[in-house]
Image (cartoon, rainbow, N blue to C red; front, side):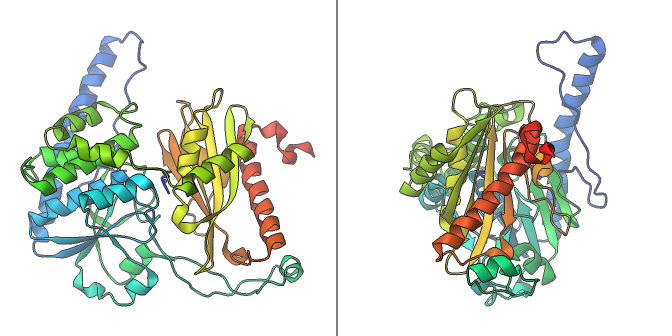
Length: 449
């Protein structure tokens, strides 16, 4: 969700244990000789890591010359994911590996739509109907870029029976006994026996993945940074006279900007990556992407977030009701707007996102914060917990996060305005209670017993 709102280990091919690079000492504090030596060790370690990963990636590509691979992106791919996937595709072509970049959700953020259209970024949307015509035996591997397979879903229907919540359903004459679920694109691909060739991401480790190559670096601000390091190592010799290289470099620069708040949250690695990309990218093309207009749906979501927000302990929380599936990216944009209010350091905006044609509904939310001591990943995971399979409903990275909670059995029925209103009130109250238990626990009704 990036939202957009929301994952990493350093491995050799047979060992999947994570390697964590220690963090730097507190800025402004006088460093001892031991700390200086320790920082030198960290710098050396960080310098060795990309070289080791590049060599492992080269070996993986060598083993798969002539193959076809699928690159899986999250449901709502952001500039970091889109640009990184394109870079992977260009690198793979050097080894005669043909890749298709796929996603299962929607492009709704105006900048993402502009990026794809203006650069010609090769992207395919796979729906449930699309998969029925696909022969997955044609693919010898799949790749997860800027995600680890937990946010790749197919839009479609699957029937399952569950107990009936009789009182609520009888009151509003709703059909019972059917649960509409989104089938996981990850499960579809892996279930067909397509092995995982690579996982490359900058988020915290989400769970074990049996991948041939893994480069997971939570200390890096953007996956585009990792891919730029691959390019700097010579995996593709970018040429400023080649249109495709210029457009990919522009996309990577946009990916860097979007995941570092226009480089304001960038680290040394991002600045070095931006310096390299500056040789090839097209500033006018990037400016055209950034100046794309907000849709009326985004403006409406921002207006509703202002109208319905509550502010508690410097948190701004807004439930904005129902949104169309294709307008999901208006949620993080509303959160981006709310966090700019005076005396607010964190904003959370959420809605029930629905697809009328397929009767799918999901509570989707985004968090934005400028409070350095607040970890969005920890906050969201503690607030909303896990599903029955042990998967968290959300997570995050530095200063941003998101969550996605299935409405499940209560999906649909919104043509009855009273039912739709009551359903929203229930979900709105539950989300607020979960958040308030962390923001202001003494004000939560559960403490008033």
